[in-house]
Length: 252
Image (tube, rainbow, N blue to C red; front, side, top):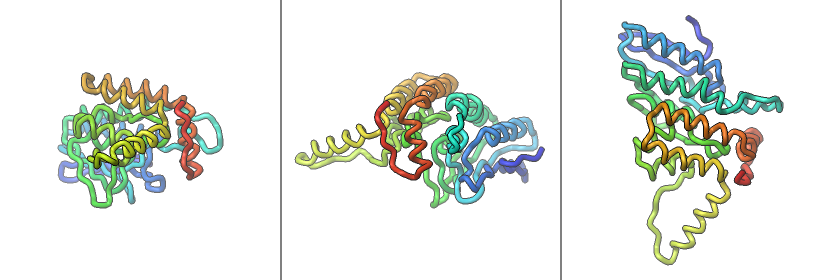
């Protein structure tokens, strides 16, 4: 079966599956997600396929959700974010985890948002030197989804998971005593300018993940993303992204 947005070929027992929307950095829309689900279903049932390689065409692996789908630039109403998660991302993550064949993810460029978390759902992740992983959700007032709040704490620990999930670009640091309070104030001030609702929901999801199954965590991410997707900061974040300017978050 021919697909427009997913390339698939098999050789030597390996299925090579390529995200193929290079003009938009392989960002997902719902048709592309459906195509990938179909390909994974076929691979799962193909006895001749013994392993899978998942990668992206062009200079990116996957830039996450195509924002033009959920917030159309023409001002028309797009689908609810929680609906997209339920239809597109949760089924993909569940298929990757349930696939009883090894899945190697070859990150050839940027892996952002859902793209980064789909990579984490694979069994082995190889990255080119040009690759980068970005948990970009907070930049537009959203919560990590696609299993991000489930996989990250288990892979890197809770402290680093929070850093990654906030896309804050900082590491834990030790400061000279006379600089400690100034640094603490600078950090708190920066956090206060971020989308507060999304930060709080992210924190809730990360802590819930430690006692969760993947299925329950995916459902929690969908629920929390539904809340974040109705916030002022989400719409401001997407508008700022489309207008190529810095967002002005209000915390609501």
